[in-house]
Amino acid sequence: MKKIYTFLFAIIFAFSLTAQDLTINQFNLGYNYDPATGIISDMYFYVMNIDDNEDVAWSFYVAILLSDPDDPYTIYEADRYEIDGLSASSSMFLSDWNIDLNSVSDLPSGDYCLGIFVDVDDDISETDEDNNYYYISPEGYDLTFNGGAGIYDVTKTNATLNQNYPNPVINKTEISFDLETNGLVNISVYDMTGKLIKNILNKNLSVGTYKYSFDLSSLHKSMYFYRLKIDNNTIQTKKLIKY
Image (cartoon, rainbow, N blue to C red; front, side, top):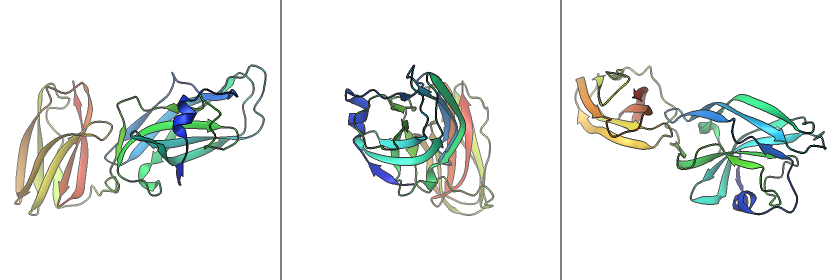
């Protein structure tokens, strides 16, 4: 994996003098992202040859890119896939594409737009195309990556995080855990993109069983994650669903 600098802004917004035949279907695509592990899973989308007359007989590349939402010139390549070719007016469905962001070289912690790039020449820096890059992450829902936070051991015995109750949640739920060693305990709640929603607890605690109430009445219906850390080491992460 490599960090690449490119004129992405020009790729997306500039008017093209030379039409690009390959593009991404903007209506049938999706993915899952677990901020607790840094894993993008089950990504799916269509690569399309929109030229009615010309086959793409040679191989081309599809790349998954992460771009800084505040700096479109800074891009990180997460993964790529080589495809043999596409006949005129045809498409290819790619699915079950999984990417571990922890394996992306030199990727710093932060928020990222997730995009798909397709190119027949494998020249990601060219600027004469305007439809071969598409953001798969919705605007305003950037992925949050915490470097190293995705590598955690749920078998550690110094604490046990319990499933919240009730779950699914309408308004309030109770989060409990069993602490087997003294330490600085942190419990935080994140949305599906990894953005911090609320820090429920950050306190030195002694051995024991603890319960904390969390009010979700102001949050949208969605899936959320809550994470238990002891002395800044992630112990466990669990999911909760807001109705």
